Length: 231
Image 1: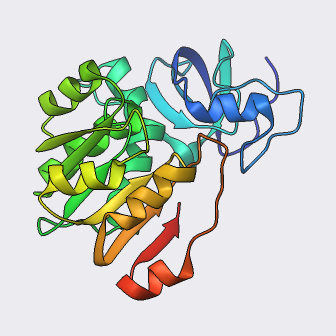
Image 2 (image 1 turned 45 degrees about the vertical axis):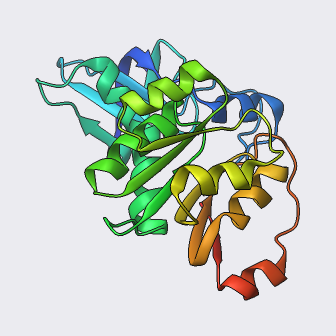
C-alpha cells in the first residue's frame, strides 16, 4: 500500500462525474489548469477501506480506479442517498448553490434566466431556484430539452438554438426583463442576456463554451445599473 498523506482519504471509485470542465482540461483551456500528465475527473464517489461511502471534489484523478482526496473536500453519503444522486450534487450541486445564493443572492422576488436548462448545472438550477420561490425562465436548444425544463418546474421556456432575436424571446417568455441571469455561452448570447436584464439586474458568468470572450459594454452597465460577476 502506498503512503497516504495526513488529512487525505483513499477511495475505491464507484462513480466519477463527467463534466465540461474535463473537456476544458483535455483541451488545455480550463481556468485552473493541471500540469500534464494527469487523470481527469474532479468529482468522485467511492468507498473507503472500512466500507464508508464518500463523495469528494478532487483536482483530477476521479477517472482512476482508486482516488486520493482531501478530507476537507470529502463528504460521507447518508444511507438514504443513492450513488448517482450523491455524485451529481458534488460539483454541479455546489456550483448551482453558490451561483444562486452566494453570487446572485436569488430570492422569491426574482425572475431568473437559466441557460442550458436540461444540462447538469441548468437542470439543478431550475429545481433549486423554484424551491427558493423564484420565477424561472429556462433556455434550451431543442424541443425535447425545453420540455424537460418544464417538467423540472420552469415557468416558461425559450428557444436558444440561435442568438438572433434571443433578447426578444426572453422578454416575451418572462413577461418583461429578468432580474437575475446565469450565463455560460459567451459571444452573442452573453450580450442578449445582458440586454434582457432589468435595471439593477445581476448576471453571473460561469463559462464561455463558444470560446468567444467578448467585451462587457460599459454603457450598458451604466445605463441600467446592471452588475456582471464571474464565478
